[in-house]
Length: 88
Image (cartoon, rainbow, N blue to C red):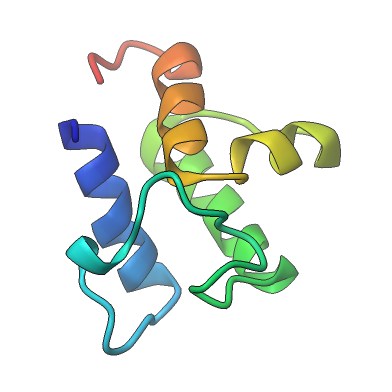
């Protein structure tokens, strides 16, 4: 697992207040939205804001968001491909 994926696990736990969950509990290839973590559409909005604020990456459509937030791996790859001036 790379550093960005680990960082995203920690950030998701923080911004979504996932109590009782550790980064090790999050499978980076498991479904994010509607999966075992209980992430819903309101949580997705919080994640969009976090991605834009922390990484400078804009998710500007629902279609893109559905792909990006399918798994933690997909989210990390999207950030790596679209982050300005970031060596992820």
